[in-house]
Length: 433
Image 1 (cartoon, rainbow, N blue to C red):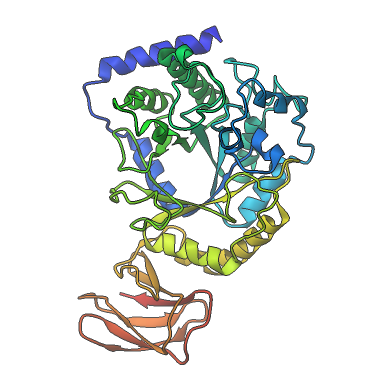
Image 2: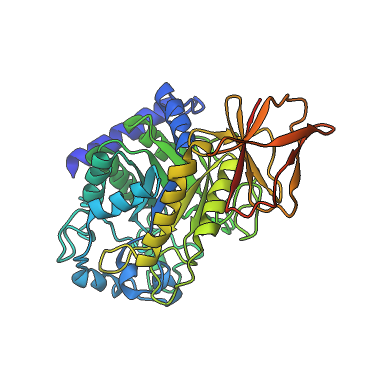
């Protein structure tokens, strides 16, 4: 513990010395951004004590559970079916390239061994296993990138200044101590970035807990970000704050929406030039819900992935593992469907960027070099105008079969003359420019 605190203090002092210099990402960081954009598909995993209750991850605040009662759940936390290799194998087979796992959610329970308190899966439960360590090792074995979710807020710690959530958990407001809490977070982040190998990204959540404060709340993000970039320069930082990116962030997150959309009311912010990620649920909840079997169909999920890629974004698809540690069978079924599709059509997704043809109701385009992939997902006719502007199209074929597609020059684009109305989940025409 003393060693970790010394590291944190040193990093903070180093940051203060550089505080006047705007954040300049390192070469390793810029390379990691490119790799992140190439990956296109990740799996989000919301798992913790809340999973045991089967009513999602906000149960502590939604039911106003007392902060001294909620931790008693840890005494019976024993997910006997948890198998890190089984999780990562299924995720890899689905075509995902990275996972984002909740190391510590808003309830304050840590899925890793930490010197900051015994309220963790190793020291505070009969399970006595470091879940993050096992997942980190499995990710390394299977070639999957490890990203770590970390909550900025805490409904249980007395030193966390009470925000607009968790107000009914009984914490005494007068015990709030921001310097203490800030040090706690930075100590845990230092542990995560020191003890678990290379981390692809830190995924923050909870900034919005103080977005209504009369006086703007200072999260000291730049200092915290400085620690992360000092420990692992390649590690990307994202923050689910529902606004435009802050200095020091490396990716921009859109919750329950694709960039440029705001159907869920959380993603109306401007689109930055940073790598983009859309996080979406596979059913209706983030954490495990025993009553939620309303899973999106394989078709919906594949088209969501394709539309994200067409908007130059990654899809981070969330699954809430069961209390016993297994991934839900319906989730595994959907992952299998996505994996089978990506085995056939992944070339049109991985390593691409949003194409020169912007998103339309009929679909999107992705592009790699002079190959433009037209993803047709909602077309009501056997002909389709593609606004390629002044770009010359040399040839058009159906992706996967190389069947020639006839086309005619039409104004500032071409009209594809298809044999029939496309009915595939994603009918892909490959254009050579």
